[in-house]
Length: 235
Image (cartoon, rainbow, N blue to C red; front, side):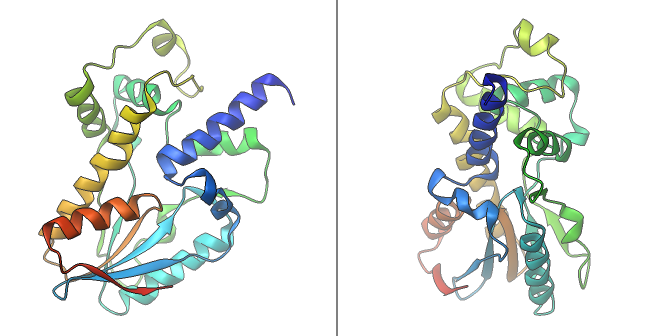
């Protein structure tokens, strides 16, 4: 395997860890055709957490859509993960790329898939889950600006070097930031954002589509707020 392609695949796996949020032991998830979820409740509210990843089998995403539709028929609303880079400025995109090595947009994931060369995998399409039964669908995630602010408020300004500025925005770059800092923002800070939205929501039944590795941290935050939160069903 050529060195350049090997580097891209390493970046692909790293990106799945950080952005799709699945660890190396769960990499097999991207080959699965059935989705899984866990129900949690504190008696006042119930959430159904669907374990997601941004790249996978068409059958997997079709199954997710079925799970969402079934939940909507039981009066759930949808909270879904997605940082919308269509609204980002060029500087925000370049700073985000400095965090994860590429722009984690549908186009970015498609480019990763092309380099990986696996034609059995597709990129997640949020439209597949929206407006099923009703339009009670809420994107519950950082904006690009909030993502950058979250990092910079903790670790200082993301200074763009010549590589960051001159490399075409659609190209990959090597991530040189400490992984624990990136994880703090990509995982932990977004968990706090999601948990806060769930706690403050007026909706009592919420289906959550988020990367699988967010689940443990999210539940811990909910339990810190209310010890009554517990698992009631695993599918």
